[in-house]
Image 1 (cartoon, rainbow, N blue to C red):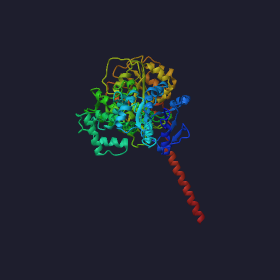
Image 2: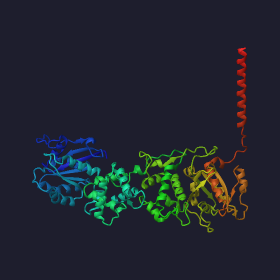
Image 3: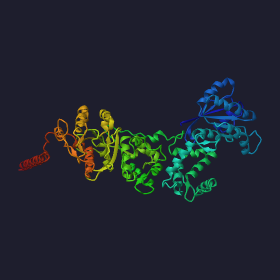
Image 4: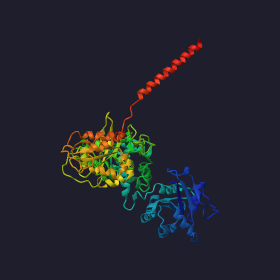
Length: 627
């Protein structure tokens, strides 16, 4: 917020204008020329820690000025309601507070008892208890109350600071004074902050984690005396707390409740804002969705810092060290988030990636799933990096530093590798050709002889080791009944790196599906492709097609179909072939009719000979001239 606009109102002769002049001139002005002061703006240098500009608007309670008052109240961020005697105090509850409600003005109110120098001296706490607390209990809009004296310059700066704080550090979203508890949204935010501060995830903030928390939020060290006082306050409320282990979540929430009860809600806001919360206690949109643009023909991948973060997260939450995240461990990991990413639910996680024998996602599958998520929906990965507490190596950077953008992939037919570590392959073919079994084999699942038709698109992602030891993540997507719609969608095809045409070599009607696809969607020939004959362990049959598969691919100058079976151990070679073709797409396009001979060596030899002749000629001329 750039400006805090304070509307000062109350009955006539309560000292509204005197409070303002006492603030600005630092002296009490007895003879005021104007009954209502002009608007005053105070620059940020005198403002709050939030560095805001403050605008103070004086108003009149006279009936003829009521229209102006209404306008100013509706423009304000906070109301300073001033009273000075028993009469005007009674008017606070009987007139002013109901009047604000009738106008629909929903801003905090600071209640100010001015001219305290004229009242009988007494116990301040008793005055607050008897006079101010009842009206505050009745009207929750009242943020705070204070006694002032413009004449003696008592609490003048403080009352306007309370007004600023009511806007920059509002109590209403945090604390329910009627119930005496922190509000659910505040508790949820503080629980997430506790989670992120509990670096070892043991359920306690140990002394070092408390020191780190203090340094992050307040940029100053936490003294041992302060830490002892914090623990003492928690132990009084929860005598059974195991403080030798540290401060647990319940104690952390109670500590912040104490801050709210004592009027130190700015402390809670400092913590919340350090963790990117807005005044409505939601995470800032700029934090969840930092600027991240992907140029045409490029894609998004995790950077080394991103992979390292997700590796550390997996190892931290694999509490039983069995190499997999069970349901309880996954629930604990995703506790500070809205839950599993919607994209994961769409891909039927965890069946979309690698799991161990117990059905729990492995580290390999975990990294593969995030690699696929980043490739398909980088905004999802960025949001969850924020939820899960990714901290960029450079504090000035955003969560986008956990991602990187690949070089544009423009001409696929040009020889050479595409600089991508995550690639997408569409697996297309006739129904029951074995596509689902192929995806199962890719994820090391046992072969299921029962046929389960694929309705919705299904994805599988795993890492593949290429020749030379380099690893990439291959996404296989079976299109199901959406195959026609996806093959018509140019944007979907642009994102695809390879098409794997599959057919059942034991079904005579299987290959014709591929032929009809290419005739119906000729533009798919712009993509590299691999032809694959599945179920090669069964008897091969003649295909009911104008040309047999080998002849057909030969007519296209393409490699002959690869004959494989998901029951063979060699099926892994197919996945390597697919990954190699996706990262080196020129290998999966039709070969030229006649490969041009490589004349590089001849050109080098001719060039060397020419240089030698020229050099010899120059030497001969110099020798002749010298003679």
